Structures are given as structure tokens and as C-alpha cells.
Image 1 (spheres, one colour):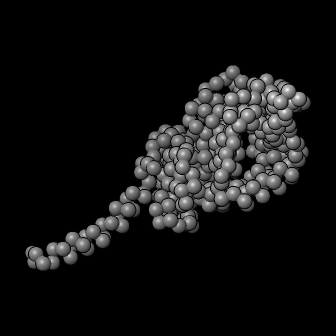
Image 2: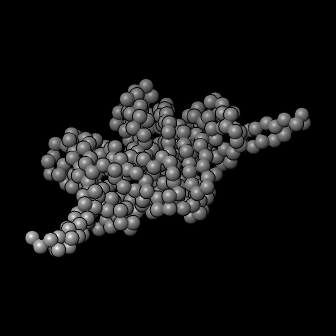
Image 3: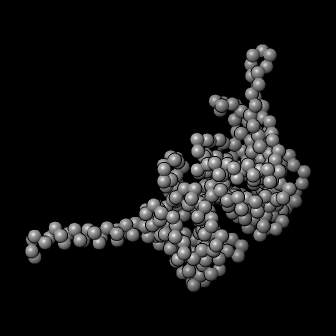
Length: 327
């Protein structure tokens, strides 16, 4: 071999090998190891989810928008992914996903897919690890892609049979709570318009401090009521004004009402957006009379602390629950 040509050969090898190495880092394979007896559906779902996660990683590494034209997604899933990506790009941190399929009504889910949020401007600096759930239909087409509750919260509700004895209904409630959370992260007004009933009651708490005659101050929570339309109009303005929104739920309690189709869901919520952060309790009154189109009749928010120093917690007996509303 001509020694003088060796550097040029090595350079060519590097040039051609580099893209291959980059592609290998972006490629994600998916194996469904349980929950599906239909071999064709299993293969279709594995291919659909693998192709989607590979495109997500490739788009993130190339700092570009998602190209979902060759991915097997429903239109609704395409729109949801685009909104989530616009809020903050992300990538799958595993190159091999091995999970079981879970049947959810007429569809199936793959859970526990790990992501790292990768904001382009570095605006978010904590809680960047998230997990998503991917749903697919009987043909293997992806129908939804949304952020999950923490695994421990999800399993606590699924394993508990004290309040909600129907396992299928528990799973359905959690599924919609996860979609509800994702709707704020994706600024999905369309989903929120659909999920709130037309006569929904929205109650928001605000801490007021006032001074007494002895010079001491007292704190109390005042409440503002809004209609569905008033709440959504205000939310639209917030969505337009904020570059990103990150909502997390780090605690959940589900209680069934006397009417077996009504459930009270109490969530401890963290809300982070541009230069703003708060935590508090969100209570949702869900109506699952129509399981294909459940509705929220009541949404409340209360701060978990009554002072800026966060030394005075909201008394537990003041947190909204089912007993506060006539059903």
C-alpha cells in the first residue's frame, strides 16, 4: 500500500463512518414481549413505534421539526406530537425498548418509554426526564402519544381497590388524567375544550394577606369562579404569552362518588413556565357516563401554602373534595 495515500483513506473512512455512527445513535428498536397474541399486529406496532422514536431522535439531533409523513400515525397523533415538540423537543434515551402491551378498551398501550426533554434555549433545567405512553389501534397505527404519570403514582392507583374497584375504570381514569396533563404541556386548547363540560365550574384560589389592628397580618384564600369559556379564554392568552409550559402531577387520589360514573380526582400539581412557578392542589370532578367522551364538571386550584416562605400549609380540611359539591 502506498503510505502517502493512507491519511486520505483514513479521512474517507471517517467521513463515511460518521453518519453511520450518528444514525446508529438515533435508531430505536421496539420489542413487545407480552400482551399481544396477534403476530401481525405485534410486528406492525413494533415497526410503527420504532420508526417514530427513530424520527424523534433524528429530528432532535439535526435540530429540525419532526417529519412524520412516513410514520404510521393518526392525524390526531400527528397534531399532538407537533404541539408537544413545539413546546419542547425531546429524544428517547434508550436504543432498545422492551415492554408489554396493555389493552385499553379497543386499543393498546406501550408505557414507560423514557425521554429527555431538550429545550433549544436551555430554558428548562430540572425534571427533564419524562416517560410517555404510546397508544395504537388494531392495525398497529399510533393513535396517541402523551406524557405519563410517575410510575409509582400510576401503580399505586392501579393496585388499590379501596376506592375504585373496577380495574378497567381505574386504568381509564389514569389514561385521561395523563392526557389532561399533556394538554397543558402541548397548549392543546382543542382537547381542553372537548374535555370540559359546557357548564363546567372553574374555581381558582388566591392568597390574600391583610394587616390587623395589632400590626400582625393574617392570610386567607379567596376564590374566583369562572365559566368554561372564561377559563379557556384566559388560558389561550397564557398559552400565547408563554414560550413553554410544564405541568407535573406528583400525587394523585381517586375517589368514587355515590353515582358510580362520577369520580373525584385530587392532584398535587407543579406548574412551571417562563419566569413563573407555583404548586398547589387541583381537584377534578370527572363524569364517565360516556367512557368514550368523559367530561370534567368541576376544576379547582388551591395553593398548598398560605405564605411566601412556605411555612404555613393550606389546612387539609380546606382542600376541595367530592363532599363540597352536590351530585
